[in-house]
Structures are given as C-alpha cells and as structure tokens.
Length: 106
Image (cartoon, helix red, strand yellow):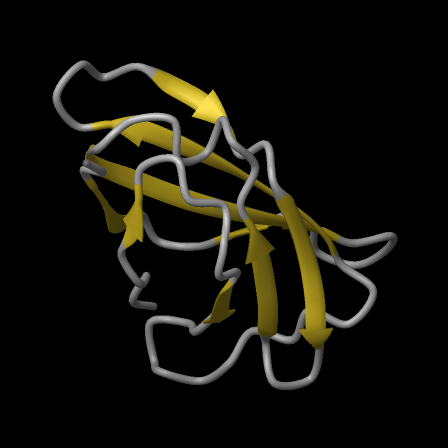
C-alpha cells in the first residue's frame, strides 16, 4: 500500500487508497469503521489521524482520506497505519506501516 505525498497545510486533494494484504489482494472493508495513526519519524511522536476516512468501495478495499489540518500540520517523513473495526468476525484489521511524506510549503 503506497501513500501519495501531501503538502504541509494543504487539505486537498483527498487521497484515494487501496488497502492490500501482504499477498497483494485487497482487504474487504465493507461495513468497516476506519481510524489511523501517524508517527513522525524524526521525533517519534504519534497522533491520531484527524481527517475523515471513508470507505468508497468496500469489496475492492478502497477508501478516501480527507485530510484535516492536523494531518498535514508540518512537513516531514511519517509512518502511517490504518485500522479497520468490524461489527462481527475477526476484528480489528491493521495495515502494515506505510511511509508518508509531507512536503514543505512556501
């Protein structure tokens, strides 16, 4: 699962993400509630993703991350992990940690 780079302070455009398992197949996200964490690689500080995480195609494992200001507050390199909670069955599911870059703004 690769994450597109963002720019510090820019809450648009939203990022479209496909959650894939280690074998490359999509994780089914139908009826899942998504959350996530961001860890600053320079400081080790961790924070919750503040923006909306919305499943757009559950069967295909696709969701949208609409950034909140707190998600893109500063430039740097970060680790991101998403969590899916389900009403029943094996829950939660977690992604592998993915690297994410937020570029500086002028």
